[in-house]
Length: 107
Length: 118
Image 1 (cartoon, rainbow over the protein chains, first blue to last red):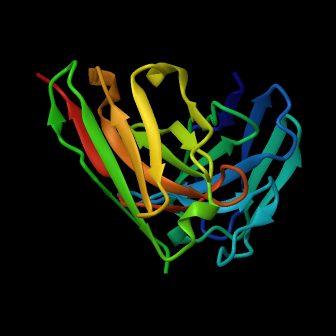
Image 2 (cartoon, chains in turn brown, green):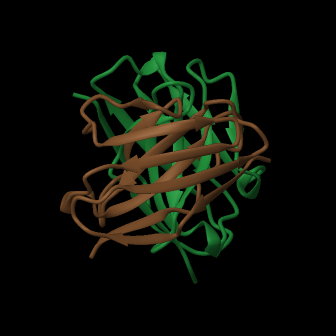
Image 3 (cartoon, rainbow over the protein chains, first blue to last red):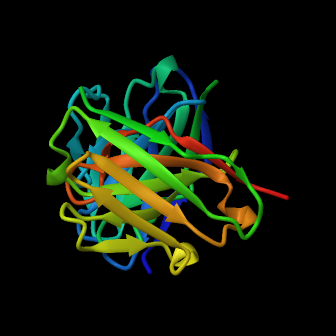
């Protein structure tokens, strides 16, 4: 099975900061990785697919990069509405594992 | 507008069975892979199962293999999850989700709560 290791598990940053979340896959999953945002009490929302393609309607301050086994989600100019838990997901093949999540808070 | 509406969640005793349904609208249901993802209270997301467009290929997380069965009715735009021999660890909100590219999910339902407890 493919293992997804996401870090950090939580982070706190100031409004306007750039934050980065990392997801490591084992083994290689090519670019078949998605990132989701889940705000408290809400349904998950697709932010990025194919590792770096921004889903329609998602603000451009979100960006994804990586391939193979190392991936990152970056949020530039962090906004209060970005407070949420972020998950990576492998869809290279079943089981379609999610990372453990990163909770993003504002200082 | 894409809509996914789950139903069927309930409080059920360990060992019991439950069938979840998801009614889809706003897109060509038969043209997309569909899946179920669950989330235990206060925990992260866990993929449960996927079914391809025709229903001919199904996939499951190891912990539910042999107990859960995913199916779909393309004539009526419905997705199902038959859950048998339920365990306490199956307690979660179950989300129905539409796949975008392969199995990244671009639309999610609001979820239906399954609680397994005596």
